[in-house]
Image 1 (tube, rainbow, N blue to C red):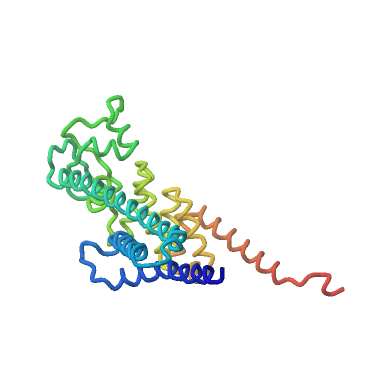
Image 2: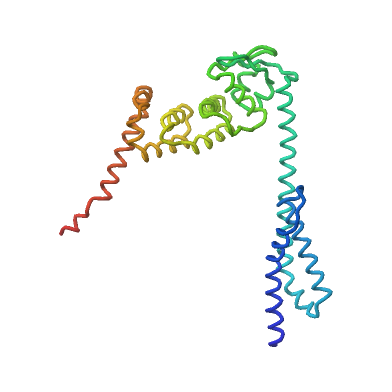
Length: 293
């Protein structure tokens, strides 16, 4: 019995060490560039299979090993699932790229465009009514047959609130679903308002995330204005937190006077939030009456 227990203990330690050994071997191997991390599950599975075969043929305690093979099999099954998930992700990415490249090519090369989008400033940009209607319920309604503002094929459609560059970024997103990292902050403001006006939720979320991550005292007032214009509660909350955190710097900044003239309602909201914060702080610092009894 003692020998069997010792054999089981030794074999268990060996099985537990296989995973670590597999990772070390996988990490140290010279991976071809085309494999990278995504190829590691297959390599580790192969390593475990090879090690298991050596145990079955070279060990006198193969029966003991068989009892403990469950842990190795579990790891192998887990890595198979990881590999399957990676394969599905790759397939999805390839299909998305295929569709994105096709739509983007048709737009950039003006293949069978049937409408011209006119910005407030700058030259117009040709587009496809089908793409506009598919990406935005508002555009679909405006381009539908029963709409009074229906645009016929080849006619123009005006978005006067957008500059040429902002309209280009909007259309680029509608065709590709990509919001480039180097988009200037002022263009993100315009795109967020446009996403709210024309009901493009995906663009709205992308702009909110980008702007919320960039909020700081220097731009918080403008961000709060844009959040109010676009009815973005996420961005409004982030901006208000920044105002409260840097109240003195924000309220006494050169921009605040003009902000107050344009946004009386937001100023009232800021004042109430600052007073509530001050009252909360004062209440927390006030000594308890019982302490003086």
